[in-house]
Amino acid sequence: MLAACCLSLFLVMMDVTIVNVALPAIRAGLGGGLSTLQWVVDAYTLVVATLLVLAGSTADRIGRRLVFTSGIVVFCLGSVLCGLAPSAWALVLARGFQGLGGAMLNPVALSIIANVFVEPAARARAIGVWGAMSGLALALGPLIGGMLTTLVGWRAVFLVNLPVGALALVLSLRVIPESRAVRVRPIDRAGQALVALILAAATAALIEARDYGWHAPGIRAGLAIAAVGLVVLYRVERRSAHPMLDLRFFRALPFSGAIVIAVFAFAIFSSFLFLNTLYLQEARGLSAMRAGLYTLPFALGVVACAPLSGRLVGARGARLPLLLSACGLGSGALLLTGLTPVTPPVVLLLSYSLCGCGFGLCNAPITNSAVSGMPRDQAGLAAALASTSRQVGALLGVALSGTMMGAVLTRAAGSGAALALATHRIWWLLVALSCAVGALGFFTTGGRARASAQAARALFDDAPVPVPVPVPVTVPVAGYRTDSTPPST
Image (cartoon, rainbow, N blue to C red; front, side):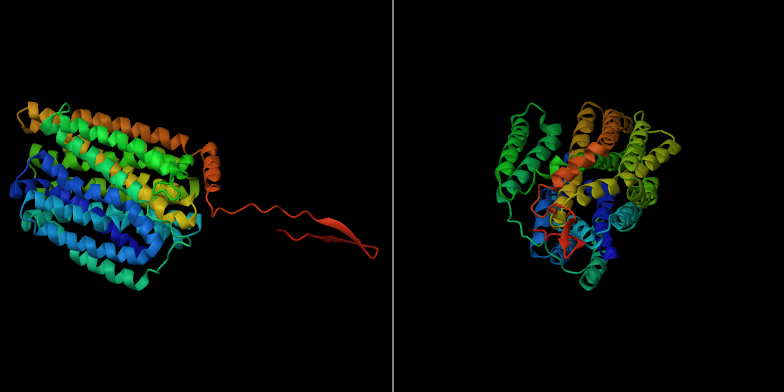
């Protein structure tokens, strides 16, 4: 069962790394500028982020295995459409359809794991193994993507998903048990529509700001729609009897901290992959295959530290792995703040290793904090919220880093030196986000945070009702003293 769930993550994460390595080849084959490359990445992420919560709650309603296996089929069909795309915007649309399948995989897999592994330490270890599969996918993705792009062409990086998807589908149908929530939650159509509107407006504004400028009416309108949508979403969800974003979750400091940390950590992760893909191939002139080899230390760091993080969470709690994660991410980004086209390879490899270790350490505490404190019937929704925060971070990371870099490249000559220079302020931003991860990890894992989680847990209908401990009373019976307990109600 765990292997089947891990294969779904393998599909999604390998697709991310393969596509990043293939971006320069896609631009050469289909045309388009930097904003088009951002859309190739973010079209997928936008759909995933928009539909994760809906997919998680739908799985709780109609069956987790049904939604999970359907997601595999949709993901593979989307991969076929990507591989056959005749133009850049056709590829963007196909990536969006592929995102529909991705949205049905990760949160449902986490929900399945949370409902099967009920013992906290075992669940933490299982989540650690699940996170280690992310590192394995990252390790194989750049290598396979670089080889396929160099030897066959960029279209092969999408078609390679088909055999992995077929194996995951067969295994899932055989070993994953069907499960549903005891109480079915109605679908929050208003909340779902508002989330889609907010994310689409914010993403479009951030990506297109490079071409149109921040003062363009369309860009200002997009940002205004996103801001107003957030206010309306808060009011709608607060009054809804069955909200998509259950605000009671956020009264638990560990859950709220995990959500924000996930946004920051995955913004660092997505920016790192996007920037280094362009830097290695366009500033340093490496082939796709050599660029994949350069990023291998990052993936190996994830592979090594993800299971270690799961064991640390099970034995010591979430604070230590989160602090170590912040140190790895921050120090790795700090090494790149002076990036040039001739930066020594040893500096690059050290930076990639540190970032990989930091990223590998953060996943288990994020997921465990988001799921373990919530009712089991809400596992799908809680896992979907945690996964949504990851995708929102990845979405904003690519959109913002590409726009910040593009603003400098517009004023420069577009050379390798200009590209490297354009990344400097982004690396400093990632250092600041890493410091925020460490601060949040410290303040949301203490005794006060645990007390807030217990208080939030009691707000749910299926929370256990405290039963008064019966006090023995002495009742005289025929000259003898007998301890008897009154029946509890």
